[in-house]
Amino acid sequence: MQEKNNTLLHHIATGAGFIGLVLWFYLGKESGFLNWAVALAPEQYTGSALMVGIMIMMTPGFFCWKLYVRWFERKLDIKGIYYEDSYYGENPANSGKRGSQDSAK
Image (cartoon, rainbow, N blue to C red; front, side, top):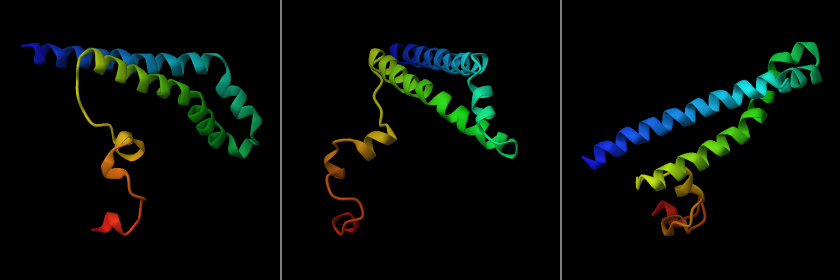
């Protein structure tokens, strides 16, 4: 029963975090950041400027998302593997240089 409860709590917390990301985007849009980013670019590149503006605006939001997800998964004692941990982590399996002869064995 405890694991099923953790699954439900995990889904609720993930949904709350997603709502937080939507609010982050809305606040960034309402602050005029995207209009400012578009105004910096020539008229034929407004779409590209908007895309870059969204990426810059959402980067701190996604960093907060990552910290939030790790925090509530630690609180709920949920174990798992993150893709970035296997790439950047201190995992002994990744101790060799990438692309070296050792990894091909």
